[in-house]
Length: 298
Image 1: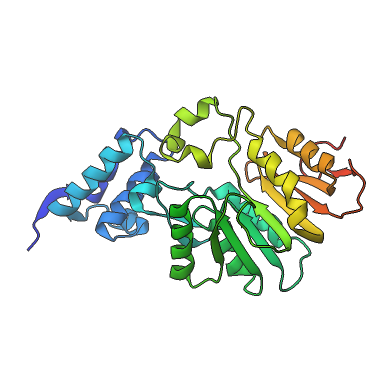
Image 2: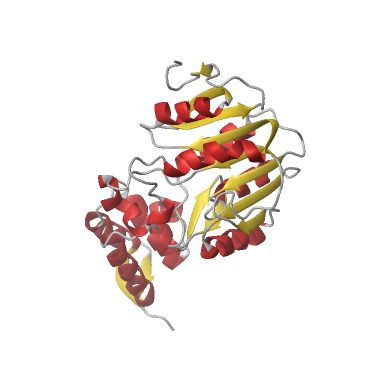
């Protein structure tokens, strides 16, 4: 029989909260304790005097030490919720961020065919593709990633959730089979290689290949914008996430390539976070820009 320790849930949570250097230290502690005890966070508040077992206390302490060292909670738990979907995560991919749900919302808002063909470039965990599949089961969604481990993870998530997404290995468009899409969506790397944020927070434990994109952070975005027209149907859409301070530069990439109706939208924090445009082969270069909730039109 597993013995009880003299430690209660509240004692452990209070101690861990003071040790974890995070803006969400209490939440982090609750998620970790819930993981080892099987109790909900609501239960901690209703029953703070509940005593944990010695085994649970030891397991919790090991997780807290890892969190103190900076390891992301998602990596410690092996999962992250996105669009209300429980996704398995690993150190081979980017951890899905809540603000990327805005990209999903923007995609769902587009006037696409009922059986639209959609491509998610650089899928990582499969978060964007799977969120779209959960809302639009008739869409034919392909997701690709250059990293074999990420491809395996996205397929695992697809199978676990029972959502139909075709996951393939490809460095952007390079290894895709011939096809045309009604929508291409991507959350590519967009952090400049010398950005100080790379030495802070969770990103220290995430792969540079999922974060960094050249000197100015625009290398991959430029490649995607340049090559996307060759993979879009007439009137198809390109929708990308980018840095909060890159909207003007990305807008210019879209306009210079000839996309129409270019528009920048904001994330939940009111930061310019995504840009979209529609492709017509006969559209004039530098077509007018829309600024709904985003950068000023030029």
